[in-house]
Length: 349
Image 1: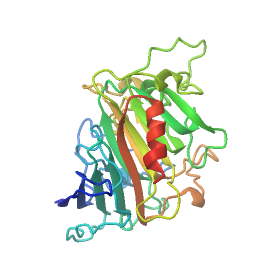
Image 2: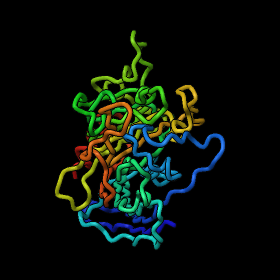
Image 3: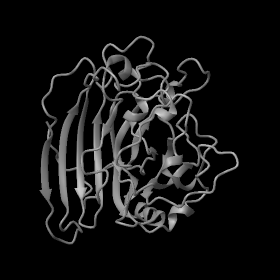
């Protein structure tokens, strides 16, 4: 069950006239995967970009520590910061009995502004997220802490400010320069021999999902990052047909004295489930609606890579089960320039 409290802000000089605040609380628990064909590949250690921390593949859980974005927050206009800097009281966590296979208690506050922006403040208690006991040989680290969602197929372009242009992670970022980049969602994944999550970008202050850019010229030596550019020229001035795009801005948690932490994100034309169900690249099923799927991560485990046969993520790049508080702002935008402007106005508040 999800508990909700809805507050309507009154008028006044504080700029909150017409704003609505929604407080929500719920608990996530793993569910057994369905057997039979299409149930996914159960390979255990070594799959994907999480350095062998796929405990859920061994324990039979249905998720990897990522929290699905609540319905209606991923694709629609959303949230501005509330006028007050004091954290409002939220609903108490729903009563529950701790599960031996892990659970995540969530509290979220949505501040919805008439101008079409939504600020979301997350409180994620992952202290009991890992199964007890942990499978032998696995480290007590979460793969990631974040949210995921899907955008309409017309938003097939992406721009961001952070590290790039190629994929990079917390322990694999020295060669990725900080800058503004853009490209085609279809070129953000890396087609590894074994299908797996890929294409992450770290140190991201803001990102924008925009209309599909024109097809790039075919490179003489195709690579996974051939469509990315050193600037977001392909998407910076694009006008969205059929509605605005979606900007995601890193924001400082309420009452935090520090600046907004950077996010890690990835975006792909394939869903997580479709990738995990395939053994070869050509077996990845296309999305019937042609949507773009994205992950927004507050924390993400390193990928290791000291050798090619064992998990080698160093302790400083692991994500310990803890209480994670973080915030994002969702805003409509028509270009990368608008997303950058929105970040200067909202993301650092």
